[in-house]
Length: 533
Image 1 (cartoon, rainbow, N blue to C red):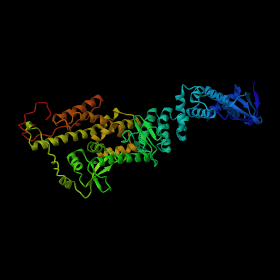
Image 2 (image 1 turned 90 degrees about the horizontal axis):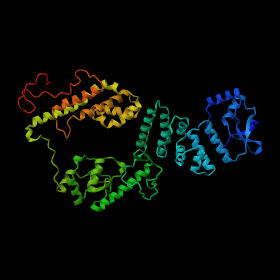
Image 3 (image 1 turned 90 degrees about the vertical axis):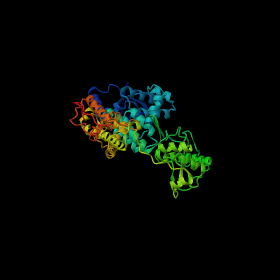
Image 4 (image 1 turned 120 degrees about the vertical axis):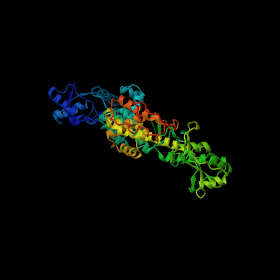
């Protein structure tokens, strides 16, 4: 039985989960009410002062106001309900009529659990969720900034993308997450959105965090200090996990801990070898920053053993450099990648060799071919020129034939950027340093053109095939490699149904041997009919 109640006496349900009403749908409902009347009256409960509270039916009440104005009494069904029953009825009614969005459900869950001291398991039953984990996943969405939640509520940002952003809430600026959500929400295709998410989170991690997978200190280590150090990394709210990586968003803590750890390591090395710690910055490294070939283990071990007065021990915190080669040699010689041997700046390396009575390494000799090849210095020089010729010719050929392959890979730039990101480590092998830097800058600034990315990706495919045939440090140069590279590139073009222009392989021919000389130093033989000289 319904009762007509003045609209000004009806208050909204304080536990109403629906936050927004879609205007178009509301107007359609109002038109239906004008034509067919109110088929089901909203439910209300009486409260003090002769007033009422809506239990459910907020959309119908709003549509009634549109259809008949705010002075027409609203037909209502009056019920007696306590707060918990009223909350449950509103949830069921809204979910039955029109599904709540994820943010509305999350806020309703949070309110229900707070108001009625409910467990997540009990809340899951009320909201029709499978288990407690489903409740927890929804509640975690509320940790995201309001600007991100808005996109989730409208459906422009899928929940699974939003959940990947949650770990970064405490470690990157809020405005950066909102900007990323805006970009994903504006994506034209799901592939674009996925690409924006992956690249965006990776970029935020690089810009605002330290990678702790390779941190030198144990993640459970707690130095017990209060000046910016919050304890162990494990369980810290400033740690974000993504794929196989863990990122620290509290730079002050990471830097303080890595500095403390390096100081402890340096103290141990100093005590073990009897070498003092460096007392100023007026020293130059003996290990760090050098190439593998420049490291003389004999000298360094002699400096440790004889305790040269100009040599000191210096801590090198993990956050100050990322030179894997230096870490390797420091660990090999000193037993710690966080400690370097340094030399007083007024002492030269030559003087150190003299003081320690260590013979400096001889200058590297120019490698010569085996004696059995009977190649003299002139021939070695010519072969080196041929080696460089095939490498340069291969790279120049790849750059020249790229436009013929563009039709093989046509896609939207976001997808190409993700593919390029996976392959870019090899692009710099065949592209000039200047061109590679220009391309990388355009990718970072999101101004890269489609043809740029297509060229880079296909160029990498071509280079990988050609590289299998070119000489290297473990594969001696052979004139036949010119033909091998040419055949590899031609085969790839055939697979891609690309017709290359005449003369495309002009750079992939060995230079003519000196007149009357063959490859082995003897008389040249006449070429067979039909073969290329």
